[in-house]
Image (tube, rainbow, N blue to C red; front, side, top):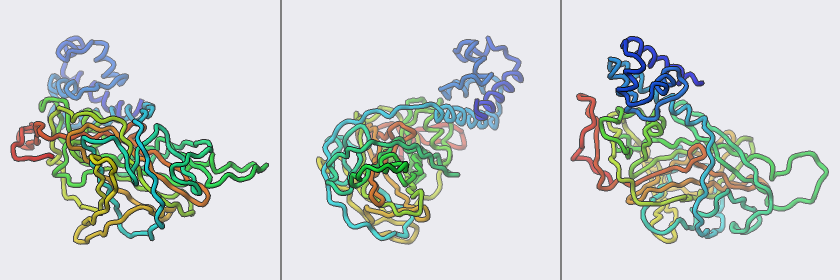
Length: 406
């Protein structure tokens, strides 16, 4: 049992004992079984609905500070259990792949961020040149053969969790590596390139806020059931605990770094859609009360409404400095990382998607799958949905008639 669950259960027990209410009375008012409430208080189970926690706090006479602390501990407990649960990636939809010749690797840029904008709207299935969709498993790429030619070498998998003090990092779900050519058989006991882990690691930060005062989440909940907006650091736990989906735009940061002193070339990044449906008919909630300023880095635009989407570099802004448009390939090493910032846009669709990053190093090459702890990322349009803003004075969510969200 994690400390987050222990602390959460401890506060529940303290509030329950102080209130003087029996388990039977509390369970009846909460509309849960008495045994279920016992499991909550003992830390054997964690409620999945915030409404249950809020009602428990009110019934036991919790103060505003205790309610805030109870919410924080509940969110940590839910997040801890979710991150420890194993998951199997879903199979994506097949889509055609169009190969392109690899350009010469770019010289190392000094810009801290590269942004890629993916417009995930209603339209054709994923297809493209630089960002193509196909297959349910990573594609090994042979350095000496056309990009569309499959490799005959075995795949290898890695799980490389990243770390950050200000964000939640996700592991690489799967990866492949293959030699550029097939060497002659050898009696050496050294592992073959096909069995070696990829020479790069990726720190994944899926809940970043570019313009924090214009960050929205879709929730299938009434305003009275939604807790106050989180800080950016707590956004992932808040969204996961409540089943929230980024509305309109989802920002994703990838910090790619070599695991040795050898140079690794990052050739391209592919967007894979796993499902696409109508936008979620839920209400949108603004994170404005927890926001601050934001910077606009260099960006690429990818419009998936067209039959053959292309990544189109556009200049970005960082502070007072205009950052020229930059494109793949990039070079990384252990001492020379590259940050990739992506903006996934949805207009009228609810899209599940993930990424694949092609790399090569010496005579090895491969593809890394990038997703949210083994699950696809999800982004949904919110056009025409009710928009709520949080009123700090009344501690309630209220309809915001002045807000716009495309």
